[in-house]
Length: 289
Image (tube, rainbow, N blue to C red; front, side, top):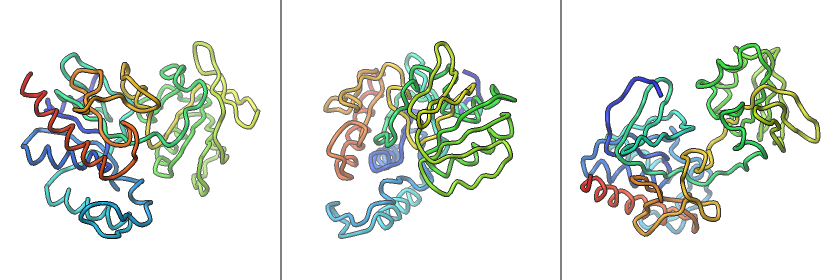
């Protein structure tokens, strides 16, 4: 894995919902060297909330008001956020690393606060990952120059990546889960809906949509979240969630998880508490190294 190395951090926090915010604030207060990956808007789940009436200290706020309060606290703490999406995490023995647009981030410990995957996995998606299925347009787009590809897109924020792919591929068939797709290119064909299957033996050969089999050389799944077991190989799951103990530790050494990705209840207060617990467990872990 090549890239410009950013140095060794104490902890890498992935996810900017309540659990990630809580962990980042605690990491800052404890003077840890950390890198934090997430969304510019922090949390789409919070943004879309109507009224929040069960969070201690905040009385009947809207989701946007709650988001703004969190953002103000993060900014006043002087914490920066890396907004590039991560599609793979690499265990490095005694550390974890990610490569984002030519920059390699590495940390002694890892905290997954990635929320719940909101879109279902397409049949064949995980089996053909790395064999024609990709989650990163800028990472793998060059492999499909002059070829036919399909893109499954769940958020308009990824349309810039589709434009990038259209500059490389000969033909791009786009499937969106939302209305209002606005890219107009001669080689882009767009439909609203979700494919049912990605076919292929050793390599992607076709994608199935509404009973029709569409021949393609590759499929890019551009979505808000990736299944934890795909994001980090070897991660133990239970009932669709990351399995953790009371210290928020996973089955992988130095890897912790917090928030919705660890199970119900899907509550902001629960996520904030788990983020704090996980960060304190990481402090104990770092002392032992």
